[in-house]
Length: 187
Image (cartoon, rainbow, N blue to C red):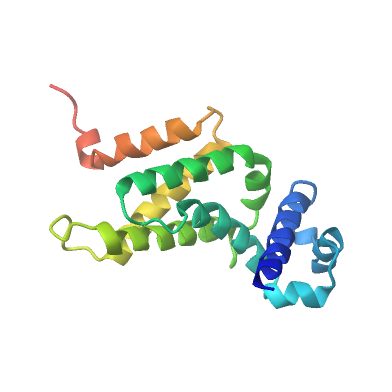
């Protein structure tokens, strides 16, 4: 029975994803999502509080789901991020539409919050307490989550194509330097 529940939830998410490629999020109704999925409204509310909750479930699946519950190594993080960025590239039309959701339930915040949830798990399992010991896992994961959100946004909106590999290389390269080092002129 639980498997069927997951299947309906996934179908609701995928149908919202597809609707957003054709319509503005503000114009999409719960009824339209249900009609696309072939379920009644009560079924939608068995899974989600509202369409924002459904949208967040899509992001959670794309980001947290890419980690496959493996928070055991930096390689697992790297592989997960590669999968996230591949999804963003593949679903660029959806991400362009979704980033238009602003305000109290902004899509950008959903992306950042899901990245932070993932990074908190890695911090808990892998963090070297001697490095940046003045800062909590929560603060550092928020900082890096916002960086990943920026890179994700760049992949969607940059005039220069930023592939998943380039995005990963950018994260690795930029993370190696502080802003202060970048601002020093070479001698």
